[in-house]
Length: 231
Image 1: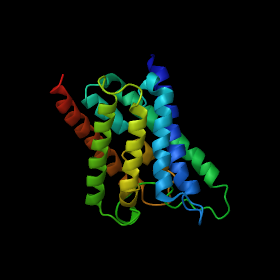
Image 2: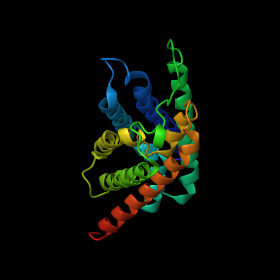
Image 3: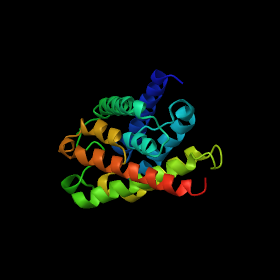
Image 4: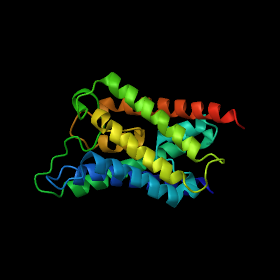
């Protein structure tokens, strides 16, 4: 598959992740009595990955996330030559999706951007968790995410079920960590909405690049070490 097709797939896939996941938070989560709340937002993020994994997994691998790309590289599943192009495509897809979401949301009466589904610590954490708590959460959960991705896509794993396992894993990650960091585990997702948030989200973006990438590399390396024992 040509690189341009892979990058287009990553752009579209990440666009869908941000529009679907962050869109559920911005447009549907806070409606009185009818809002989908944390559980609904968690499911929305999981469903975006599950649906796109089936749609583009055979084209680009459906990373949709710089931390996943770094992790798969560290795990020996992805070429270093494609790493930067993938990250650029993912980040652009997230930014365009956030722009579309902002255009939709701003059409409502009395619209205020507020946090706009952005990630943060301290005053920007949904429940006030400090930087260390958020850092640990993002590293640990991204490590588990990559561990699951590596295992589910292993040639020895049951064929055809990887998108389900990965989508459900991302759902569970959100159920755990929305109260802590509003859940990133994805630098592109964090970047896209931070550009439109009416908060100090941009100065905190460094954590949501560093922590997921570190966690992703750790998770992939651990899985690679364990899996190698039975090869």
